[in-house]
Amino acid sequence: MRKVSSMVRYGVLFISLALLAAACQAGGEEAGADLPDTDAAAVMEYVNETNPYTEWGTWPNDEWNNFNTNLVSGAPHGNVVRIYVNEIALEAADGFDEELPEGSMIVKENYVGTDPENPGELDAVTIMYKVEGFNAEANDWFWVKAKPDGSQIDAEGAVDGCIGCHSQEGHQDYVLRYGFGSEPAVTSLSETGQ
Image 1: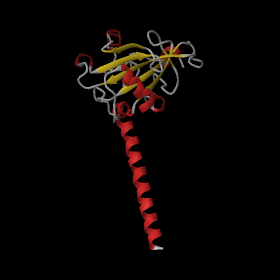
Image 2: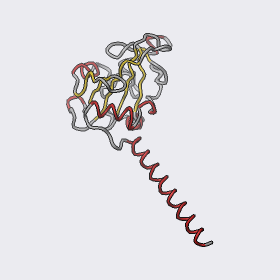
Image 3: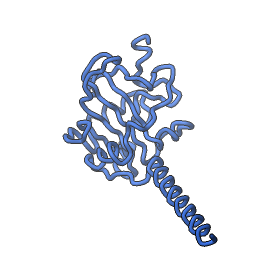
Image 4: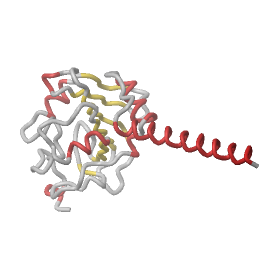
């Protein structure tokens, strides 16, 4: 009987340790472990498979934008977008201090339709990824524009068009639609009256 009791205890201990290890590994991915290199294919694999962006949160709603819905947008992102933000950036948004930290990622889905209620086909994703030392002149943002499955990369790296647009007046660390408590450079609710 003692032999069986010891085996049960060891079995329970082994299972408990395995569950703890799995929980730590999952938590590490959310917090930014195993972040990709500055390579569009690696970034796309990360946001689609390693740490799927569709499971991330989004910016907190403010008086200008409801981030829990599709948003009215425009070129070069499409007329309708949806924004996802990883845990690193979301944690930094509360008590924002001028710049988002290394590892911050923002994914914007770009739709072909014009109606936020019926956005049509998902045409592309555009990604901002903060990588320390990548491009100090533009706050170290690495940019990607690709087909949603990563099969076609349209832009990557220190993309002049992305940097130029996202450096317009009113930006907060190259973020245009979320103002970290201030009015953002780009809004939806005030423009549409929703």
